[in-house]
Amino acid sequence: MSKLRKNLESSKLDRRLFLRGAATAGLSVFASGALAQPVINDILAAPRRGNWNDQFDARASGGEKVASNQPIMSLATAGYVQNAIGYYSNIVSQGGWPNVPGGAKLQLGVTDPAVSALRKRLMISGDLPESAGLSNAFDTYVDAAVKRFQSRHGLPADGVMGQFTYAAMNVSAQVRLDQLHINLQRLNELANVSDPRFVMVNIPAAQIEAVENGRVMQRHTAIVGKIDRQTPLLVSKIHEVILNPYWTAPKSIIQKDIIPLMRKDPTYLTRNKIRLYDQQGQEVQPETVNWTTDEAVKLMFRQDPGKINAMSSTKINFHNAHAVYMHDTPQKTLFNNLMRFDSSGCVRVQNVRDLDVWLLKNTPGWDRQTIEATIKSGVNTPIQVADPVPVHFIYVTAWSTGDGVVHFRDDIYERDGASELALGTNT
Image (cartoon, rainbow, N blue to C red; front, side, top):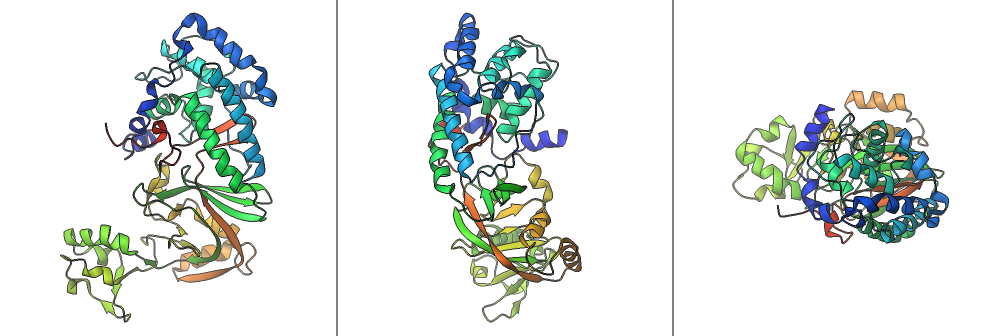
């Protein structure tokens, strides 16, 4: 867990900064302690909760997983989001939820006045049952509720109130309601998927779903495009899986990354087994290139297959105008980062070999054993997928999988229109 926290602290994107505007947005009728409990009771007892009723409360105390095999791209999910809008509309009409004072490292066993505000906040969002009561003690009920909240917001579910949990928690109820409305429009456009099998990449969640017959068969953590090299929205079909791929560097990476590196370290290409080829296909020696100019952009930079290859074991191809693809990576530790927006537009896939097996399940001769043996051989092996699998790159920052579970993610590419969810550029 300490390693994970280090990753959080060293994250390039400080969620506390870009959510800083939300720190005061939650101040409402809860400023009066005498009014707090009646307002909570009104919200929890509101008739408009409908079928959600006690599911938010009774299930929260167990700290159960909030994951589901319900695909994000489905009519059911769109329906659940509509229900969530009703629930969050009621929260907003009752005054929202209280701001949780930051600064204190709240966790199991701590007693602090801020825990009382935390309890109110978690009760209203349905993460903590009303029966847990109001006190200053961070007990097992609060621990389970914080973990549930963290899971719903794509945070490490460690039960510790750190800066990122505070930031997500202090986004106002109105902003969350608006976020649900915006994403319902997106989901309605995506819901009518009739394909029996498809792959979905949800960019702001940095997550992949492999869906079959209306159920999520696999989920994969992903790494997607940086703010200035965004992963595009697209629809295509996966037609090829390449084991032990060559990697050909795009011009943007040659210009922005490789040329500056060669100016600092002339051995960079040789050490990384990257070969240069001219337009006639003839290999060019790095020492013959003038690296003080950009003339190298005219050359092809191709990395040999192997463990240090930028795509490692796998490249997954699908036709698209953006020249992006999905792939493995030798930098496995990056999947542990909270902010996984670190690529140049392509999508890196954790545990990609599981996805390989699923994609090739109907391609004769390519079971798991054969795939593993081929990867071990190190031989570049393109495989045509017998039944090309549809792939969707989407942008959804809020959704619900039923049972009162509503998920939110940061608006990393600033497409939701709320400053509280966008990346802050100023301190």
